[in-house]
Length: 162
Image 1: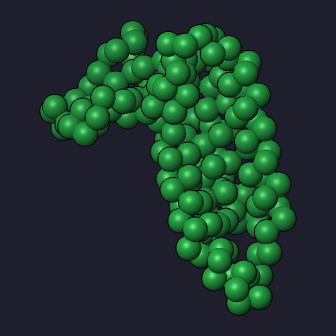
Image 2 (image 1 turned 120 degrees about the horizontal axis):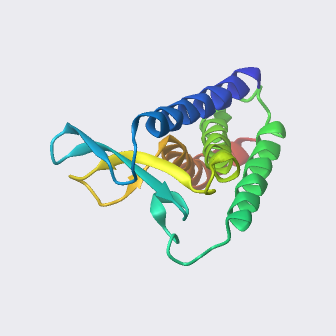
């Protein structure tokens, strides 16, 4: 379990460091630096919504978003704590939970610590879609995907063999 906690802390650290650097080096929202012209940019956005900016224009209260993120992170943490780490077949489950915990707390930290309670987004793949996101969003998205695959395909096999 210790290595997974270190992975969570590492992902949180990378997420927060990247957001700090974007805050420190960009002066206005919408400022962008092309890494690969018209495909991948670093674009400074302050997101009032949830992952990929969804719900940003609905006026969802930030304290509600903080509460949901903290409750989700704690629920995933409890699931991780209750896992049987001696069963090597749960590695994808544990990876999914670790990503979900890091993503939940990564964006919750922004909601608490940022002056306007918005999440700092900066990863902008213009060649794929119009959303700007961050490392915590990537953790959440990949974590949800891995969790779904684990629960649909791997958990039935684990349960059947017990």
